[in-house]
Length: 349
Image 1 (tube, helix red, strand yellow):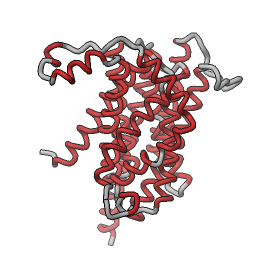
Image 2: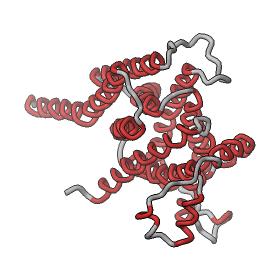
Image 3: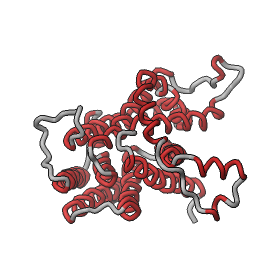
C-alpha cells in the first residue's frame, strides 16, 4: 500500500487539475477572452486559503518571518504571474482547450533547455525523447491550424487580432518562462529548504497588485460572464443544501459559478504540484504533469465533444509518448546504467 503522502499528492494533482480543465472549458466556450479574470480569481482564492498558515500577529504586517529572502519570492511571483497570464491569454487567439493542453506539454523540452543553460547534461535517449515531443507539438499545431482552415506561419503575426499563430507564440514564451521558473524555485529549495507553502502564498500574494492597472478589462470580462443563464442544479443535489445556499445557486449565473469552481480546483491542483515539487526533481514534476495533461486532454474531448483529426491524435500520441519515454529514462534508465557501471567497476578491482 502506498504511503498517504503520495496518494494525497496524486489526488490533488489529478482530481484538482482535471476538474479545473472542465470548469475552464465551460468558461472559454462562452467567453474565450476571459483569461485575465480567470487568473485573478485563482490568485485571490489561493491567497485567502494559504494566508492562515502565514499569519502571525506578533510580526509586522501580521505575516510570519519568511524563511526565504522576499526579493527571491518576488522574482518567482513575477514569473508566475507572467506564465499564468500568457497561458490564459492564449485562449483569446482561437486555440482550443485540447490543443492548449498538448502545446503546454512542451514543458519537457523547455525544462531541458533551461537545465542545459545552467550546466546540466542529458543522455542521448532524453534528447531523443524531447526531439520526438517537439515533433509531436508541431504536428498537433499544424493539424489544429489546418482544421481551422489556416496555416502555421510566423510571418505577419498580429497580436491585436485573434490569430492562431500569435497564440502559438504566446504559449511558447509561457513554456520557456515556466521552465526557467521551475529551475529557479528548485534552486531556492536547495539553498533555503523546501518551503513550498511559502512559495504558494507569496507567488500569488505578491502577484495581485500587478492586476491593478487592468481593472477596466477585468470589469468587462466579469460583466460578460454575469449575463450567462442561471446555474442549472439537480434537485437531488440542492435538496441536501441549506435553503439560502440553494437559492444562491439557483440565481447564480452559470459562468460565474464555473469561474468560482475553476478557482477552487486550481487551488487543489497547484497545492499538489507544489508538494510534488518540494519532494521530487523538476524533471519528475514535468513528467507527472504530462500524464495529468493526457487525462485532461481525454476528458476535454469526451465531455465537450471536441473533434480531433487523425493527425491531431497522432501528434498528441507523440507528445505524451515522448513524455513517458523521457520520464522512464530520467527515473529508471540512467540509474540502471549507473548501477551496472558501478557493479562492473567493483568487479574489476
